[in-house]
Length: 425
Image 1 (cartoon, rainbow, N blue to C red):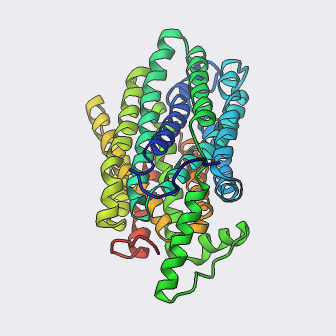
Image 2: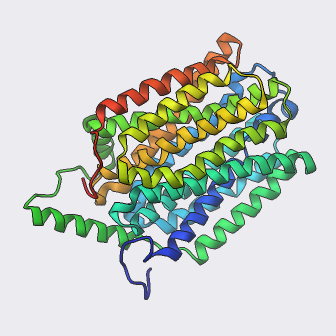
Image 3: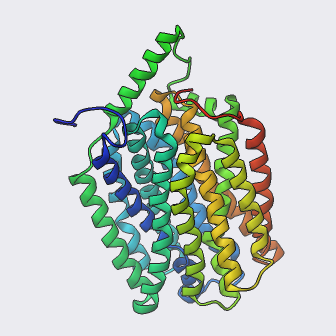
């Protein structure tokens, strides 16, 4: 319901609701961020995972990635039919078991169960917050909106990782995650039910403008599929640019899986404290988040291709360089550069997908992109876990990520058109 609200597009015209949606994605980022460094730290100290039990350690990210990917796929399509706000509220309700499962965990299996509910929360809430902002904004503001969204989310990831580590040292890991998690969930649920409105009418207005534009040009609407299975086939195997963007989304999550699973283990193996390791990982998240305020709108002005491929190649260089240095300053610098590389590619990929999506299918196609993107958590963690297991070293995942990011960026460079996208495909 949107009583007494004028339905018009633009960030300025919808400032209050866009701020509410940014708060939502910030809170969602806090939820995932609280598990960085602290949960890998619990693996050995609380649950007795051996230092080289890389596959067992990787499984919590694999499960999170699979669940979030599936929820992204379903959420985009369902939100086109049932609206954004309902799914946002369901996403927060799904988060409620997470802090309790971690607090009362008797074994590592409990942590894996918590990741199922965290994946549902992230898939629904993050997707709805982004889709709602894209509904509200003008078509020419997609890069800026993606930049604002990812800034809010990933700055929160970095802040929460550092703050949770501090609280864990002060009060204990389980107690810290319980209190922190319940506070975040409570705020998210309260604001979602009290302040957020559904933005589906704004999406319908986008489609109306798109249809009018095609009519003025004497063109028919694109003959695109409407059922989820057909849209999945179309976006994954038939559309060359979406194919390149979907594989890029999958591979770029290798970086985040590396930071989540193996970077804490690597840094702790170098005799850094939990707080020191969390600060380095927080630098990555905060630079990633803050830089998107620059890179998101820059992609609207200068085009997507150079930022996406350049970001991939910068991440490749920093992943390879991370195991070649041995000081806190050097690791911090490389973490910052890796974060900036992610800022170059991350909001730009989402904006590029939106560029080539018809408005009436945009949420579904973005959902498919986010399915492949977050499936990268699972694929990356499995590959890195297997490689680390057989090589008996945590160093090799860094090499895998570096090579994969270089090749993926090259595919995008070849497939995407080297010019600025128009407001509509």
